Image (tube, rainbow, N blue to C red; front, side, top):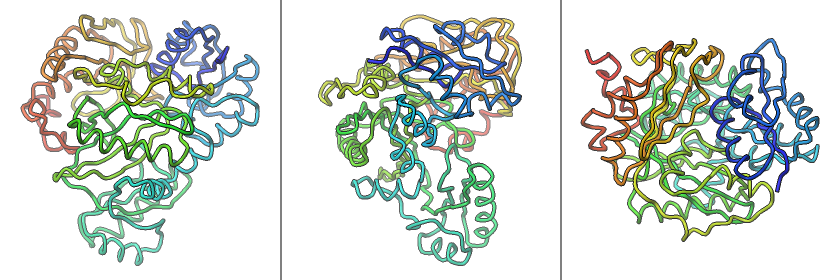
Length: 448
């Protein structure tokens, strides 16, 4: 097992990784920039490494500086968390060259899954259902328009190297296609340095469902599904699980496991799908890292997923069999972002008062505290509040109670929006698609 691990991240995920490392008896070192020098993860770690940069983001994106930091502190491994360099094959490769373990998949697997076109092809070969789309990248407008006609409108144009909803355009008709194609290519080039795009059939009335997977490079198992359809700007704000019947979970789960084993996946991964109104599933992508919403799965299975990911990175085989994974109760997670609950615009600032809720079935993952300065340059996530119940109704009730107990003064948050969602009839009935917020504009109007 590792003796010392460098956490190449910040905020709540840095603290979450630190907790698993500490429970395993492993020294935890956290990198940080100027804005995070007094942050909770840095204060609680065994050691902090300051990486000064004029651009705050650069402290967490400078590959050579982070590799050098890992060498200086004698780290056996680096945990990338999510975001920043978590899916960067160059980072994983550099660590490998220095004899330092990257806690995640190999550089080769990261390259494969980072290319959405190659990932589609690999999953198709593994027997995972994929939506009808272009066979490869497209750039010629005439050729692209012909393929769109063949697929059938509406189609969605996606960046081949994309993620987080960046460089994604839904096109309803041929008249709008050329403009959307140019826009998508421009955004893809700007965001990823790669203007390749591809087409897929757009799934109307879709629900977003994902499977949690763990692989050790040879074998893989799954830990069930999460339902993640409530999103703003293609990014999730509320997740829950379970959602599927045992039969469907078993059928799709076996395919997901086959997909992970086919590419030799090592570490935690999330296989994401859209399910149409007929109940058919279509592969979206694989996120080759720990997910923000891993907490939902931990609450309903009882496993420490972060620790399991560390163990397989250290060379252990998966210490759990598929038969030992069972689903117990229901869990809901809300992301408490520092954002205006109506406009969804960022709301950075100082937390003059911060009180998190407690009680049966309530979990808080947060780096925020009274006096914390929420930087404007980073993601707006302040906290994740997770509620577990014996069933979905109890989980909703406990979440409502938890949100009413939360006190955050100094910044706007999404708590009023979450409170409105929890009371909304379609949500309570489970009648939710990825267009939930668009279909319920009253939730974003302050109730007016």
